[in-house]
Image 1: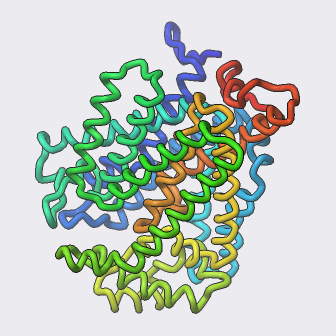
Image 2 (image 1 turned 90 degrees about the vertical axis):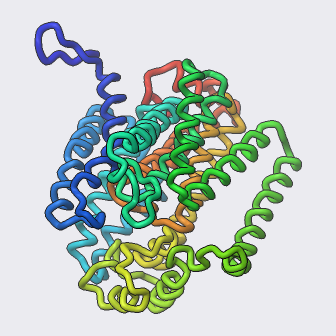
Image 3 (image 1 turned 90 degrees about the horizontal axis):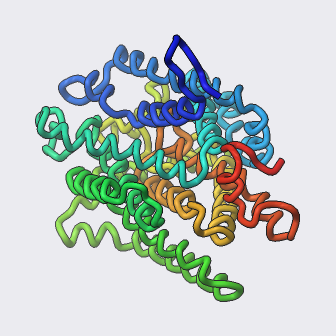
Length: 442
């Protein structure tokens, strides 16, 4: 079906879906516009923040149009993951006990629209198509950041230490999208079906340059973990029975031991090599945040309401650390601050189901692109060890993260039907190839 706006001009709905999704993800990256509207010290005034909110309107409009047009597939996707709906209800319910109800309500609405965009990506794109879409969007940000060095060196570098920030407000943002570019380009090359392998290699090199220029340790850690996850998930389809179970348990044990070792020895190690043992102020911040979490452990303080100027507890932390932290720099702590243990338990349940479905889809059809959906979930969770990207509104990293979760739950019944010997495609993702995007087993 095509859309015609004037004689001689025609545009297919599929093209609108692709370009609309790419533009929406780009606007959610926080590239270019916040940098141009920032002040000399990199801060954003209230007027600038209000103008930046207008950039969400075309994203919301695209989301509504796509969901109305594909409401049947949207309804299927909603039914396939009721635990996710329960998690999304938490921000609205938390308004009842929020220390800043109006802030929680406004941000909860933004979160809902962000997740709705993730539903659009999940029902209208296959795993491989989502991989290409994310790679192109992130690589545009990275390449533009590298070009910005020649156009405006002063603007492209952090005013504090001169590290590369490109077209973003902060170097960490460049590091995140450089990390995504490196990982997605690598997976496309490993996939062996890249239409333009030289272009993909060039994007991979650009991502590495952006990663090195940003010097973001969070991005470097996420990239390293992603390549380890690629190896792990690549091994799973080759193993079977008890061997696969033993391999998974071994990986989980290794990850647990590594986390325990990091928590115990990271600070002494950084001190020994002369690095910042506070992780740029995060360690003392986490100690104060944990104290506040323990005082309201069951319910939290309401969705994204803790770090508001009306909250005296936030001022206590700010006065102790000497700077106004916008969040706790840890996505899991942010969930506890917003919803308490109940919210974290629901989030853990959603993730366990997503990893189970994603691994099953990848093992059942390793050639159909499910490797990417599993790896991106691991990447974002690792990034949230030192950053706050979980359950945030108007953020492309979280949007893609949610799209991967929704996509796994959406296609999992096809895999189970195939395993049970029922009528259906040989592999779950073959339905994506043989039919128009969004057509699933009801």
